[in-house]
Length: 416
Image (tube, one colour):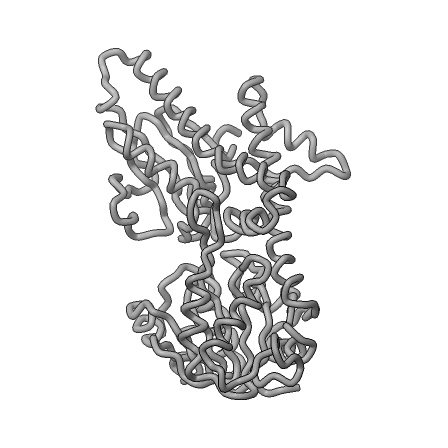
């Protein structure tokens, strides 16, 4: 088994920082690379800039012991893990690989024969090969797997993360890892790297299959969520409690319907299916439809707010819309985290602030300030309002519901 003395992790976000911390906790020298100078400074003080249980303890200890250090400039290492965002661009949801390209070009000058590069960023099929091309163009003095196979100077693999926010530190260790090398020797070296901390099984495949595996996992979940979301719209039309209906249906031994909500967010489920659609648009019909169903759900929620506002004004003819306050509960993309990426709740709140003339309150216990430009007021749970819109089922909201005002519950925790 190869011993890695120094590992560099590019991207100190929700995946990169926990991964760097886990490696460092195994007494491996880790360099965390990020373009955000504030994040780098914070990490080097032993602090964290994201919310993730137990991460702060590991970062503080590994920084103080000298195993973890952050910097904005790449340095030589034996292995490089790229964990940068892969958003999409334009109305056609085309994959945007500019961050992977930038990371590749940033580390290219410090590469040396024998190095391993692993792309962890969720990517469309073929992205690992594209990364290898960028690296080869930047370092013509080195050989790469696409031209020299198992005899290449540099080893390249894809290993997608498969962790649940809020449980990242545990799942990084316990979950199986899919490792797709561009050659068998690339895979073998990557397995050696992840065996540093992974207690689960390291399952070897090729790079393209590893890329598609992550996309498939999240597309499967997206399709199932779309079924629940579409069912919730149908049940509303038929005056049926969708949560009761799902609970009854799930009593069937082979049925397990998920729970509906205001849409689908996060950097995985809301994005990854489009990577499949972008490569095979004529074939990915069900996957595209599921995305469209989930993307349409925030608009449906807004229509329910409009109905509630209209009803409120009919019941209170002395009031105007400008005098009606709306409190929105949660703007994160899922419960009990601070991550706002692709959050349908945040999109709903943003639209409300743009078109509602009255006050819009946001109750979000996991953040200290609202995003710049959002014309709303961050308030504590219990603030009085005329209309209450539950968007995220944070634990704080499950404990108490508003004592007055109209309620729109997109998660079914107050209706029940």
